[in-house]
Image 1 (cartoon, one colour):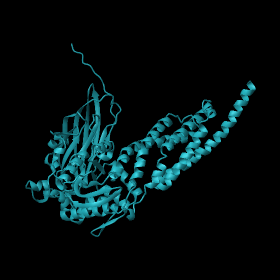
Image 2 (cartoon, one colour; image 1 turned 180 degrees about the vertical axis):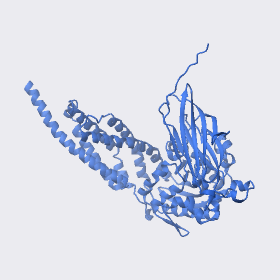
Image 3 (cartoon, one colour; image 1 turned 60 degrees about the vertical axis):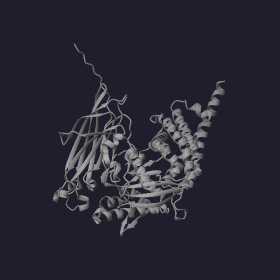
Image 4 (tube, helix red, strand yellow; image 1 turned 180 degrees about the horizontal axis):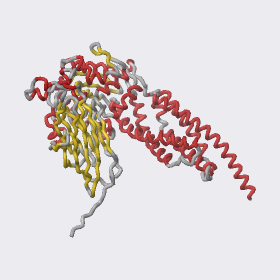
Length: 589
C-alpha cells in the first residue's frame, strides 16, 4: 500500500512537472501576444487587434486547461510550491474569462475603420459599434471580477517571476476597471448619436475661454451638424451674432432658483452658459434653437480651443485668411492670436466661424484619423473641455454617468468648485490663473466646519501694455461713463461664484482678509456664494469662505470632489480627505 502511494505520488509529480512546463510556455505566449494586442490597440490598428485578440483568447484557454486539472488543483495545497501553482491557476482562469467575454470584439473591431475616407464621407459602421457596445458590459464585469480575484493573491511569498506576473496583471486590471465601466454608457448611445435609427441634429458651440463663462467661455461661433447612418454632414456654421438677432431664449426650461441667481443672462446667447452645470446649457440651447428654427436639436455639444486643437491633430492643418492653423497653435490662436491679428470684432467672429467650417468640413468628408482623434481628445475630456447633452431623458440619464456630460453632482458630500464669469466685457480671462484649496475641516457631532480658499492672479502685463484694445477693454466701466486709461489698463472685473457642499452655509466670507457679504444662490442643490471682484494687471486677490456643512454618515476618509472650470490657463485645485468626526457632550449643573 505504501509502495503504491509512493508510486502514485511520483507519477503525479512527473505529470505536474510536464504540465508546469507546458503552462509556462502557454503563459509566455499569452504575455507576448498580450503586449502585441496592447500596442495594436494603442495604434488603433483594429483589424490586426481583432486577429490578435483571438490569439490571446486561445493562449488563455490553453493556459486555463493546463492549470485546471485535478492534479494541479491538489498540488496547490502543497506548502511553498502550492502558492505558485495556485497563483498560476487563478491568473489563467481570470484571463480565460476576460478573453471569452471579449470574443464578440474579434469580429466587431475590424469593422471600425480607423480612418475616414472621402469615398465613404467618413461613415462609421454603427452596427459594429452596437456589437462592441453589447459586448462591453460582460467584458467590464469580467475585468472587475478578475481584478478582485487577482488582487486577493499576495505576491510576497511567490517566486519573483510569478510575483511579477501577478503584480503586472493586477495593476493592469485595476487601471482598466474605470475606463471599461465608463465606456459602457457612451458606447451604448453612440450608434443612436450617429443616426443609426434616423437623422440627428447636433448643435456644436465653440466656447471662447478668453471671456469666461461657467461651462468654459463665451460662445463665439456654432456649427449645425447632421448625423445619419454613421455619416456626419456640416449643415451650417455661423458666428454667435446670428443667434443674437433673436429670438431671446426662454429660460423657463431651467429651475427657478437658477433664474433668480443668473438672471437675464440665461436668456441671451452671450451669457446663457453662465452656470457650470452643462445640462442647463444644453436645455437652454435646445430651447433657443427650437424658437429660432422651429426644429429640434437632438444633441448639444460644447467645445473650446483645446478641443479644436485635438480635432486639428486628427485632420491636419487648415488655412484661414492666409494663416495656417494646426494642433500646435490652435489653442493660442483662438485664445489670443486672433484678437492680436484682427481688432474688428466682426472680423474676429468671421475668422472664428471660417475655422469652424474648415475643421468640421474635413470631418464631414472623412478627412481625419480616428486613432489620432481618440488619443488627442483624452485630455480635453478629462478637463471638461468637451461637453455633451442629449435631448432625450433616457440617453441623458446615461450620459450623466460620465464626466463628458458636464454634470455638477447634486448629492450631499464634500464638494467645491470655483466658477468665473467675465464681468468686464473683454478677453482678459486669457491671463487669469485660478487656484482653489478646499479644506473640509473638522466636525463635532453633526456639523463640519471647513473652508474654500480661492486665489485669483491676473498675469496681464503692467498697465495692459501691448494688449490689443479689443482684449483689454473694460466695457463695464465704459457703460458706467468712464473714459481714458482706466478703461484699458489690463484690469478686469470677475464675477466669482463659489459652489459649496449641498446643505452648507457660509459663516464667514472674506476678500483679501476683509469681511464681505456675498450674494447667495442655489444651483443643482449646491449653495453658491457670489462676489464681484475687480482685479488690476499683476494683482493677486484671495477669497475665503468658511462654511458649516451637515455631516454625511461614514464620510471619514472620503476624498472631496473639487471640479475645475475650463480656462485658458488651466485652473488648479487641491484638497485632503475628511477626518473622522468627534463627539462631545455638555454636562450642565
